[in-house]
Picture (tube, rainbow, N blue to C red):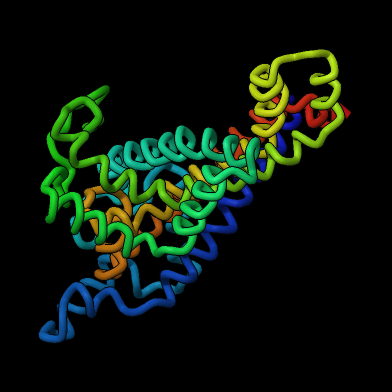
Length: 324
């Protein structure tokens, strides 16, 4: 297990290095931030002063080496717009994104796994066909359109839930969270459900496919021949083996929820990292863009590492292979 962890950590470090090259080069090639910050009325002296203060007069390799040197010491630069450390801005917005993503992830699991098992156990029933039809809609309809329709229905027409904002927050270990107030939950439900719909459809289909496959295996027939109840066969033998391949996909989907919550946060004006990166891209705030992308890659890598560890602990075959 130690060698396995060291290999995965080495892969994570290499991924971060490659991504830093790609991200820095891509951001450096896009536009001129001086034009965005000063406008067209700035004098040549003002433009030159800003260029020198941001280090834009140096070559791209010198800028990259400076960025890497500072990043290794935990400094990802200072925002050109807010004049605040970029990492500090990311950390201030991260709790809002994490609680939204984790709630959406839990909704996807709590709704997707039971519905997927139902569709797999009785694939020809009307309930299974209805579940698969709804999952097809969840795959097909755009997230931004569903979000706007949910606002029209639940906020404008019915007036049940607020359309935007985060509501009242309560600090927990220094992090402001909406999970401990009724107003916070009212603001959180719509964006979390909107973010979870696509993942619910994915989990339904993966669970259904895994259940159908497991029901055809010899160990299920043997369990039935021994006289075990259907509920024990389903929860002990079928569901356990269905979840083994599902762990990998679900773990990576958690990373994608965190990374791609931009659309939902923009629609509902949710003050998370996604809203921050949209504003930073509009203003070409390079330090914030770089900090956000590197933090996203780091979260993806850590989640992937955790998924690999869980997979090894769950499946004895993989564990024996890692020992060899």
